[in-house]
Image (cartoon, rainbow, N blue to C red; front, side):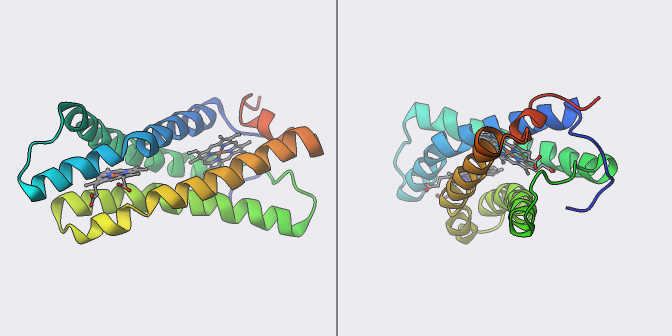
Length: 165
Ligand code: HEM
Ligand code: HEM
């Protein structure tokens, strides 16, 4: 990714990374309550109270993710990101590509959710692709982070846990 040359991530960048990750897991675990409520509305049947509560949480957690990611992108541009820990070209590009793909999903998924609510149901079908897309990317990303930390032993996971001085 472009950006200034710095030693590591700041404490705010680290806090935002793990907060957004936790909120994404919440959305993936409970997002189907929103689908249940939408379908109940279309069929004119009452939705279960738990799904109603979780659908309100889905709405607000999704908007919170969008705001936090906007802040994250601003920080990413202002503070930059550390150089890749990879010493092979393909790994460096795979890392950069996967990080940008995350940022694209982190903006596109809540946006299509908002469009599904306020513009047209058809955006709901695109929005639902969020689940498989995030699951594949998170699995690759977490596996790469653990491989770097424990096999290559280059401190990649550590720098997303301990802020740079
Ligand atoms: C990054 C944030 C978000 C993630 C990861 C996410 C994820 C999900 C998931 C996994 C589902 C269930 C899909 C299924 O049933 O297979 C869903 C459904 C839904 N979400 Fe989100 N969501 C996010 C943000 C939002 C926001 C901000 C809104 C609206 C303000 C929203 C509105 C909806 C709606 C309306 C549905 C039901 C779609 C339908 O049945 O057509 N989502 N979401
Ligand atoms: C929904 C879950 C997650 C999302 C959306 C996410 C997103 C991201 C993004 C966008 C970056 C790039 C930061 C930048 O340079 O601007 C990043 C970096 C990183 N993530 Fe995640 N992540 C998630 C979960 C995880 C998990 C579960 C782990 C660990 C197992 C992890 C470990 C890391 C590490 C170590 C880095 C730094 C990579 C480097 O310095 O080259 N992430 N993550």
